[in-house]
Length: 324
Image 1 (cartoon, one colour):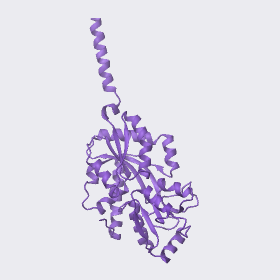
Image 2 (image 1 turned 30 degrees about the horizontal axis):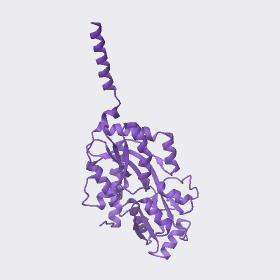
Image 3 (image 1 turned 90 degrees about the vertical axis):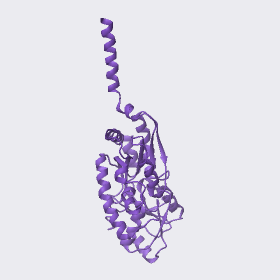
Image 4 (image 1 turned 60 degrees about the vertical axis):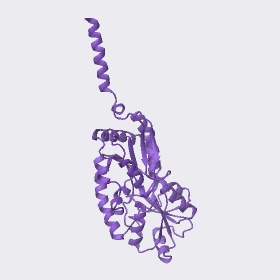
């Protein structure tokens, strides 16, 4: 009788241990990949490689970062939209690109609302308006005056046709009554390097990818978006101070997964993301890049996308921005 009771107790303990196993071991049973729909070196790529090792520890599976640039982020986004909806394929990107996609691409191969499931916001990074040192401008007023005196001479680098920084540059020029050329590159990092080299002359780009070039003197900071000046660039005025429009434009980075992923898997990913973003070393590294951590719920990302899809759509239609 004692032996039978002992065996029963052991079986009960084993069963209890199975039910008590970490959720990650039950949910994630193979490598996880984070798709970055832009070239290496940009804001999304930097964040993905910052988060990946921490997420790997949390889920107990390898987490790899895969860059799939092209079509203003749509190639990578489509990859995740069509992946198996089990949380093993993630998308880390500036969701401004998702907000403008429906207005720019009428034949979009995926539906932003139905085919992608938000996990959570990661960070907000202001845009930095900067120029090559050869441009005779150190302020917004000087840049506008130069652009008006030299229509079409300035070349604004962007991270791809239809990218939010491209649309911002088009809308800004239209509002200010200036003319400049818009030159697409494969990602924000490539765009920044092009302005550093002098191939292009102006950039409006995420702070994470652009700040190092400004602080090193390779680019001249003209203005930043957001509600306050950057600690690393205390002498660079904000868009609001310079009375520029679109002062809340910037890079809103978020983590998403495939649509129809079970809610419990999304909740698990969100919980792990919140833990990662709460880590002092992660917050410090994001702050060093000029960004601000933006933890929150999946629903908050859905709301942001809904609001900004409408707002940017109005700007695109008003400026008659088209993408071939």
